[in-house]
Image 1 (cartoon, helix red, strand yellow):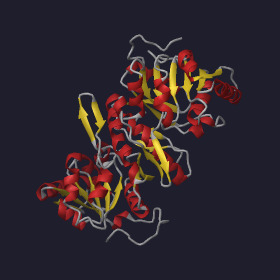
Image 2 (cartoon, one colour):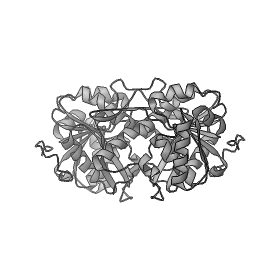
Image 3 (cartoon, chains in turn cyan, blue):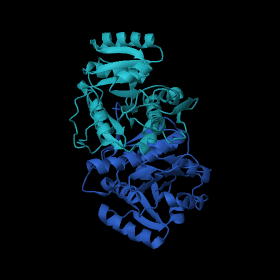
Image 4 (cartoon, chains in turn red, brown):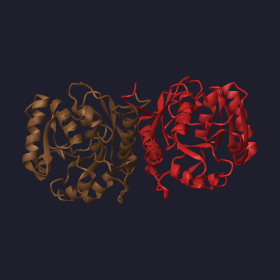
Length: 236
Length: 236
């Protein structure tokens, strides 16, 4: 089915994510793998996207085996974008603009979830990269003017997501966007992962700092030997 | 006494913050007030700084009364910077550069803790402001080349800090900086507030996203009617 398009802005929690097919562009990478595995296990149909269909199909088979399910399939990115209801961009920052530009038609009218982090690495560790459009998510918004662009899943550890021996991934996912219904759908996708809470985190123009906070979490991981995420306090 | 300057980079937790005198530039503002109150109550000597000495003295009297202590005093910003061991910059972003530029002499050799957030507000809420130097903290670093600049306390709610009826403020404070000993001292100042953990959060070049995450927390406060802060997960 398609993501809901009727206006029901008070529908917190009313979206059943298992009725959605989620496409993951760059689904063979670390973050894409982790998300695909968790959604697959949560009963959500997943299409793993990659430049090469064969690579995506191989990963999909692995994910099915790891999650003990049969509802993950692989496809090239264009097919993934065409056939999914909600499409997650989990590609490297370096190929972010190029990948999305080529998929504007397939992504028309769809909820796009950008989880790309514009950070670089040098000898001193991770650091934020400047983004002309303001953030990866705002770059996506400019490239996909007919899509419903949101941003989420930047700060959740790919290592913990992929470790299915851990039943839960205890952290919060900040979901950003200017379309309330779209952010509610994405929050439901976050909530579908045991332990994760999807929390509205502000408008898309506030995405950059959430994207780049990943650099701080990596610095924390290195200092404290952990797989850091964040939780928002004072929320019940 | 002065902040320790000998090299002991393994001294996690070895700094006794009650031996420090902490100056708070802009100590009559919301964030400055909250921090001054909590440190005062923790037994730390505090100098409230403001442009006008009289205003600072009045606030200091109020804070002494509220915290039930007598070791908070007020002074103009220059005296505050001169007499304190560690100096917190809690001024509005608009006067950040001007204030620090005028105090470079007084702040020489001292640990400076920048907690200023470069964010603006319009009808749609809070949003990050561009900073030529990269972040408020990096601007401070450029203006104070002979100081030991760190960044911290951006994401802790001023409202919760100032509410002394609440014994604890349960959140983490990310402490950023390139000087390990300085960030350890600042972490100890964070740990001195019951409920707060001071956590190393990366080098100063990663300060901008932590500063601007405050915009997201304000968006969360508005949506969920809370006083949000953050906690880092996977740390014991």
